[in-house]
Image 1: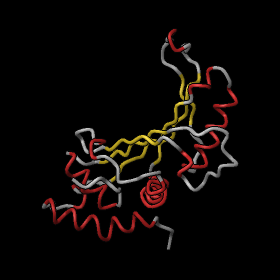
Image 2: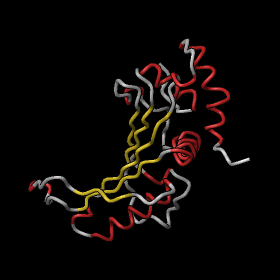
Image 3: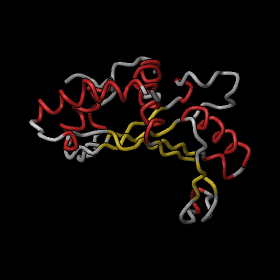
Image 4: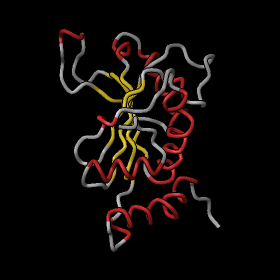
Length: 183
C-alpha cells in the first residue's frame, strides 16, 4: 500500500465525516478541504546582495521540501530603492501530499514553538474560508538549526481551502489541528 500522510488519513477518516454531520452535507465533495498552502518570504536585503537571497531560497527549500521560485518586483519604487524586475523574495506553493505533510508539521511542531504562544488569531480568515498568518522567526521549524541560519527572517503562510465561509473554514482548520485562540 502506498504511503499516505498522517493528517490526510485523519481528515478522510474522522474530520470529513464530522464536517458532513455538522453542516448537513450529503456528498463528500461538498465538504471543505485544504486546496494548497502558499509560503512566501520577503528579502529586502536582496536588492543589495544576491547571496542573501540565495541563502533565503535554501532555507525556505529546507522548510517546505521543494525549491521555491524567486519573486521579482512588478514596478519600480524609488523610495524603497527597488527597480522593476529586481529579485525581492521567494515563494513556494504546496499541493497534494507535500501540503498535508507541511500542514502537519506546521500545526503540531512549528506553531507551538513560537515564543509566548497562546494561539493564532481568528482574524486571519479572509471571508472566503482561507487563512493567512505571518511568522516573525522562521527558526521555529525543526528543519533549521541556529548554525545553518545567518539571519532570522519572517515568512507569510496562506492556507487556501474550498470552504465558502469563514465558519466552515474555521471548523475545517480546527479539526485539522490549527491552534486558534478560543473566543
